Amino acid sequence: KSDAEAGIILRFHDADNYVVGLYSPLLRTLFIHDRKNGAWGANLGEVPVPEIGPKIQITAAVCGKHAACVLTDGKRTYWTPIVEIGNTREGKAGLWLYQVGDRQEFDNFALSRARFAPAEREGASGAMVADTTLVYTDEYAAPSLPSPQDWVLVMERVKP
Image (cartoon, rainbow, N blue to C red; front, side, top):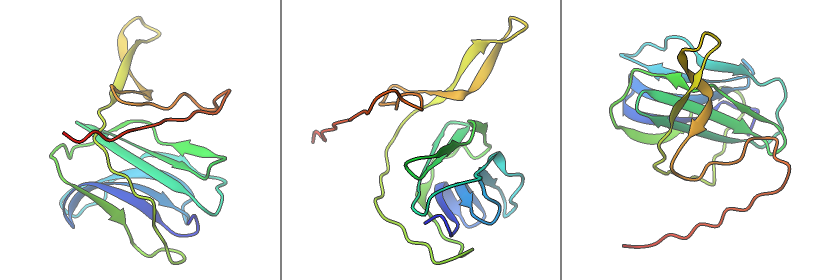
């Protein structure tokens, strides 16, 4: 629900060390935190969320030293840029529940192993720079939004 804080924890090691993609209805923002030794630090990749419907979906991803987060209500979508984080060790994933706002409810969970990294592009000076607005992966990637048509992805799990 968009009237309560919601987030996905990635690379959880303990209560003082983890990465979380977080939506805050009080701040009306989407951002990433790289919590280290109990300290919060800055909101990484913070983007404003001026308007969002009552039911939301949040997606967060980490790969190597990069993290990103996406928030949608099915009509509007907000995403952080890909940011650099210091927590690069594997860890557990989970849900963020720090009861700010109304009671939060979660459902429809999915966890996968996707790899992504910022692509390089040629900058104005001719030097190669990281493009933190695009995600390239060798797995499925949704088309750029807004999309001119509907898309359907059919997946089949193959047991070894």
